Image 1: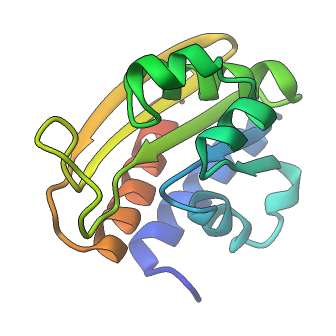
Image 2: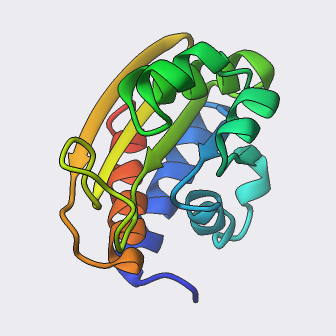
Length: 162
């Protein structure tokens, strides 16, 4: 297994709950580079629930693939509440998913600023058009650790929608 038991247990629970409600899930990932989708697809039978995953690492990809307005990216930056809200909503609008998750953050090391330090991650879920945002501040705990903490927090956010 690629992920530890705690994460795979959360993913199994999420997929079971979504499957029971005949819901599909889609992801829009930046700093995690597809790890949220990778975790879900680690579970046998995940294709019943997991519809699509977008890895939109660059601002250009966020704009071209997810239709995040260029002005929003310029004004707020990729790691911001307005951008992840747009990512989550647009993924919902563009797919047959009932539930989406979007993440954008600064995994580090470096690359941050006083305003947006390494370990800052913005996350949003969209359930039937209702978007919820969460700001996570994991700290400069290391690139892998920030990415895995984001995956864990994403599972918690998705599970909270059930």
